Amino acid sequence: MTTPAIHETTARQVLMLRAFETAAPDSPLWTREDGVWASRLARQTLAEGAPAEQFVAERARHAMERLAPRDPHIRRWMEPGAGVVRHWPWAVAVGLVVGMLADAMGGAQHIDLLSPPLWGLLAWNIGIYLLLAWRATRPETPHDWLRRLVRRLGQPPRGQRHGALRAFALDWTRLAAPLAATRTTLFLHLAAATLAAGMVAGMYLRGLVLDYRAGWQSTFLDASTVHALLATLLAPASAVTGITIPDAAALETLRISADTVATADAAPWIHLYAAMLALFVIAPRILLALWSAWRGWRLSRRWQLPWDEPYFQQLMREYRGQRASVQVIPHGTTISAPAALHLRTLLLPVLGEDLDFSVAEPVAYGDEETAVVPAEPGTTLRLVLFDLGATPEPEAHGRLIARLRGPAAMAIIADEAAFARRFAAFPERLAERRLAWQRFADAEQLPCCAMDLEHPDAEQAGRALAAALTSG
Image 1 (cartoon, one colour):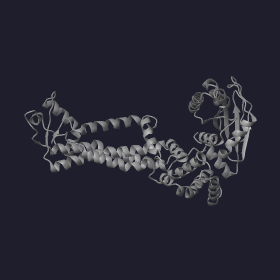
Image 2 (cartoon, one colour):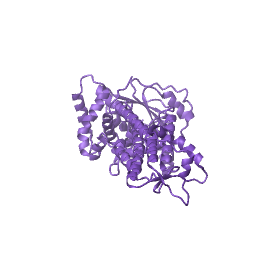
Image 3 (tube, one colour):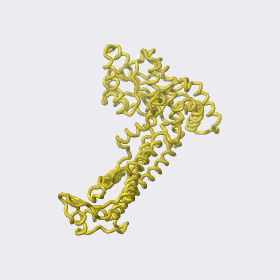
Image 4 (cartoon, helix red, strand yellow):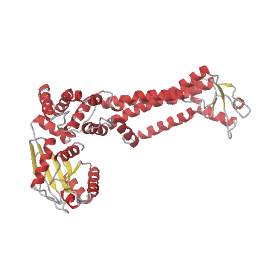
């Protein structure tokens, strides 16, 4: 079934509300009573028979009416220019200023025809175009460096990083990576175009107030070689401007030595260099920026939320009058009645008070490939329970997960009760084993939560479980 696409603004509202209802449940900014109010108001304002996804969006829209005024940082994140978008004016301004201040003439009051900085700028941009052409043939995944940049730009400033806002920022960075990467490339293209435009403006402004001359110098090149180089490199600009490149004899007269200075008029060379920058940097970068802007505009209006995650499924079940059903499948261990009760209690804030909860027969170690654990009718979430003390093995634990996969959502619970008792004096061992299970879960692309089911810290364990189930 095709999931509905929503606007970026709506996605921000939904994800912000989810962050408060999972990372900071019942906080002073957003209480359970506020959640009940938002659900009731959404039901009243929706047309009869509206899709459940629309209920989630409408509920979040009403929630922002209360939540946003309570924290100015939330209002900032809800603004259309939040995130990467707000940085593009800086890219334009910095590029223009740096370009104008750059000494495009090579440091002296003459143009060194062989070593102006614009040759480096041209080479860099042509290299970028080749890289973009190569990337167009590859799967569309942002570079690691671009992911890091997007993550940095998407982080809330210090002072805003309480649990809910940090959870939202991390969530937004993960889900908005394609859109944020597109917008990042937009302002990088704008920065490159304005840098070149600044260099052009700088050349002409300096030419207005200074008498620039043109010349060249080289230890290894003669006039014939320099003519061949310039005639080739400046051919496009020469064709556009109609300015011809002097022959080798004329270029020989422009040669600078220890005893001579540049005397030729620099104006034609400034026109040629400006044309090169316009042809190979400014115009292509503006076109690429327009392409990125169009792609960003499309992505912002075709946003896909992970509707199959437990948080959204619970809200949609609430709207339809249905209930969540959880099945726990222990592996190589059993779950005591108190531990099962603790786990069910921790699930209630995430999946709703009206929760069906069942525990299947344990799967013995070694029986992973032959185990038959049918899902109970209407099961919406299967929790595979492992002992944290066991070393995660793809050959055993991975095979069981592969056998249990189905239409219902799945998550891993690593019970650390026995391991914590055995190594109570070595907390670093517990941390190492948690990391091992998290890496295993990441490889299986499943959410994972490690906790002591015999003696859970209700608040901490509840938040960890909610975070795990909403990050799948």
